[in-house]
Length: 221
Image (cartoon, rainbow, N blue to C red):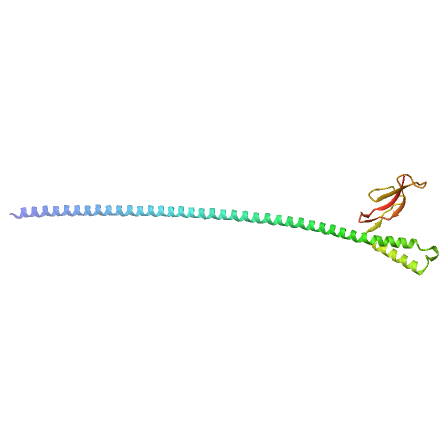
């Protein structure tokens, strides 16, 4: 084989090796690009997955917060309803207690009035006896120590009754009033007109504007 042919063969082999090297480089580059693309795609997918995960987590957190807020609001409403119920119960109990207090005070006052009237009714016959006793004292003995002592005791008794708001009922000369007078007889009179009290047989008394004992009177016919 001649040197020229050898040379041509060598050059041809070199060209073929060069082409193969170029093809290998291209293949490697393509493979690298494909790997980069796959890696980029994977990164993109991971980013999307992370973003979706964050969004899902955020949605879950929002739902959880919403449930907590709804539960808190329901609890607040229940507490407010319970407080309103307790306040209403306290108000009703206070009103009932106030009514009970007023009723008790009224009953106590009525019992006191009844008791006071009962005592006064028992004292009035003593007053009557004093008046009868003083009326029987002879004129010549009215200045004696005994008569003056009886008079002083009688006035003191009337003074104490007056302090208790016990007052005698006016009768003689007054028009007959069934609220204060008890007519036991009718009489003729030139001094008073018909229907007027001409004589008082038993003195009547009032206690705080209520009658303790009616006056027993004789009325002009």
